[in-house]
Image (cartoon, rainbow over all chains, first blue to last red; front, side, top):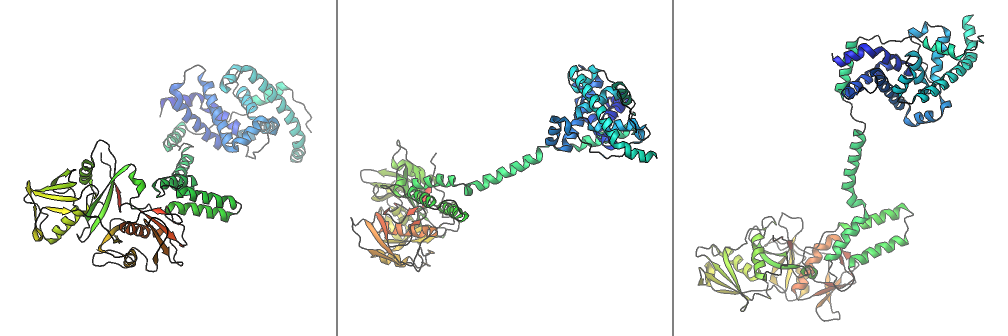
Length: 181
Length: 402
């Protein structure tokens, strides 16, 4: 096995996988995408200059892979529209909940669903900041943004996430009520 | 009903509690998938559209000469250069103007008219080039007519070679240089030139001397002798060479079997002969070959041209149903006026026959031709509604001397 691959796998594989999983919410797809990340990383590894940390560099590649995937999936027009119109985000997935989540409490499940209503940018920030617990600086490095953009995007993300959770709570509760009964 | 309102901190806490989803695969499994994927080498996105574009370009390149009318315009101007009209505007441009007129009158509103226009321009471009040499060709070229035997040595085909005029050289220098370059076999004829002899030109006496070696082969058998003398009589420009004299190793005269020893021949220009088709088998277009027979009137010649001359392997050059009548027009007498039977219409396929008529008329001493009451306007590049200059020599071939 390639020593570079081995090193990357040991250190970052689960992180990369988790990031991609939360981006696409599909384990099989995340498995494919993480492969793609390795292909790109191994191709460019010699050129990695160490200006940023290895970890943020890998996240930036994973981010590109995810964005490319969305582009391909939706067609660039739709993707662009969505980029321009933050309110146009729609829940499109009816994917089965992975085991790890099924066992979680309702609030976690709800937050997981609501993640989809965020824009791609907001989602990325949330995943990196809270799931991977990167600092503002690291997140900015990984996304190739300024720190202030990370801060504002994060702020907006939390705000809209909270709003959405309140709305969804109202919608979902009746059905949940019947379940509870 | 949960009416609990989350504050930001609680929400962030919930986010941190999102489960650490992990990839259960073994690294070797991932690495294997990786090398498989790497080997598969995805075709770059641009390859397929690129190939398609390439194919389209190739098709366009192949089809464009027949699709674009611009090409016709270019070709027409070529034809105009070859055009036999010397005084009036070139017939091609008048034809192009005709086309333009008809286009103007029938706008492209219906598909039919568009199709017709395309068809018209297509046919305008499809005709073959004339094979004879016309007065216009003489502007930049020197011409030499060589008589060359056919592969069966039964008849002699006059072939007119056009070479670029070169100021510094005499006509005889050019003649000798051209003689070496003749490509008889390539043209479907027999190899004959250059002659195995040394030649010199005497301007004062307007004669060419041909000096052969004592063991020359030109006297071997009657066919060889006949061909040799016929060729020499007809292979020099008559206005410059009145006679051919012979020497053998410098001694006067040449031994030619049945003819005995001859010392000179008068050159001849064919007169009152009819032109027939000869197919060498190597080229699609026929050679136009004058008959051995000489005719009293041009009408007799035209009548004969409707019949194959099987003995010599010559084919009729005029269709059986075409009746040509000489009429007495006005003018200098250098113009031949021909009446074409009303029911006969000529098309572009008639070009070779038309040139047979032209060459026969030239052979009978005419310089121009004018068709009367024919219902055909154009044959190939020729505008039959006008008086046309006759060709100066048959069977054009181009040769590059250097």
